[in-house]
Length: 409
Image (cartoon, rainbow, N blue to C red; front, top):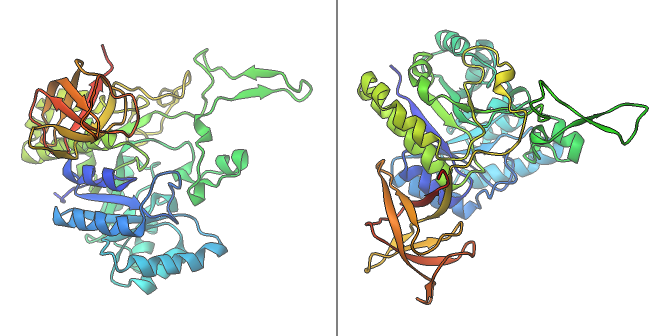
């Protein structure tokens, strides 16, 4: 059996550190240019260096995205960017454009290059093409079934790696190559500026009735005709491994630290349990499914892995996330009194019961005993986003513990 990598997204330095602590084998991030998540916080060059140093200290790899479909004006900037990146110690570049690929090979000839899903990698011939050019890994298109991936595995060299998505948002367009955003808002999805028009609400206008908007209904369920459910394969890790996939990729470079920690910790445990004993994996399935449901999601599907999706993989009546837990903050340090220092993310109050999520898998119920601001002044509540606070809970806390509140009551 091939060793399986758990690959986690990070849109900021804070989230990278969370991903590393909560179980990632590798993290993928974007710099301030040439990646497909321009709206993410992304990383300055200084943050890239700090993030790579932190990850490497924990034995975790860092891959950097440069997977736009480049235009002429981009290429000079790509060269300059790669010249800076080569001194950071990154482990791989994720690329989709052949021109960008050639620049990377010239500037960093010994660096691993991974071919992005954006390159539409749907057959073993494509894998072999990229292997001949020197790519180490190809990210499979989301449109592939597990049977197709298994066939690819059997037709490519043993040293070539397959990376496939195991969890996260699905795109309405073919492997993410979408023109809707460009057409509707002038923001190019293939240059990292997608406005997600597939999540918008649509109506029909008849040619001779301008201004008369008729809602689009499908069996009276609603009008969100492009809105896909999220991928979740937590119950199908054996099939993913059997297909010969080397890296299980989580989507979500614009997600919060709570989302990343929840998904990373859950898939880490599921993979480790399965490798230890398949029966243990099955025995813990209820825990995995319960934990995955504690992060934001759009309902779940298995995508294309077991056949072509049908109408049940869409959500027609809304475009909102299911949100069962609210992120309150991540513990930065614990002082001599046992108080946790956090940057507050959402409102909470003294006296309420919250949950402390720990990297080792424990979830501890805790009562908020006191909240203090940076001057040590007591507060009844924490209503101001991003305020630095010291929090006294009735449980022991450690750095990187995450505070969250259930919304399911």
